[in-house]
Image (cartoon, helix red, strand yellow):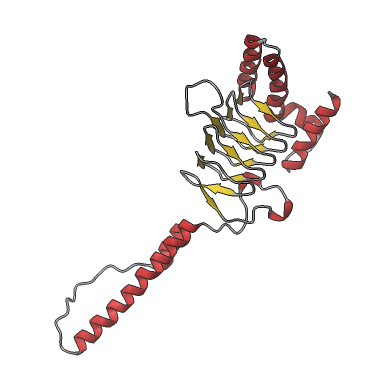
Length: 241
């Protein structure tokens, strides 16, 4: 038991640079408290003391703002940063070394019995406000961006962002270090790239039309002199970024 507590405290120091000492972690970190309550509630759930397990979970929710169903299976070195508003459903499964930020939901999409909540592989990071819904699998080492809504499986090591979430290319390993808030460098978003290309294409067409109108006017043709609004490529590209 003591070794388990030491491991849980060490996780906080590893993933939160704001942690200063062990006493602060033990007394002031709701994610740490929520996991202690959940370990007890999950044990009671397995012992078929279902009401007592639910009551323990309810007390934990009241004290920490984190709601974890006692039936959820959670691996070692699990860390919830900040924690307020986190919801983890009954049939959720979370692998070792996963990290969740505040406002994350691992929810179900059905009222049917059986598996209805997500499964997170080892080392998954889920950014603040993200929703992962249904009995889907998030692969080992995957990153879920803040406020993403994930309803389809995410491959191991991939990064998913957006509503609904889509897979993007990224420096997933980030040199092997932890990715805070599931934000990694060098995101290569295909949707943003496509929008940029459309903007550049539209600007190029504007230039060609101006050349054609100037040539037509030089040849004596009739040209409509009304001002036409033109795209500002720089402003639009900044908006997309």
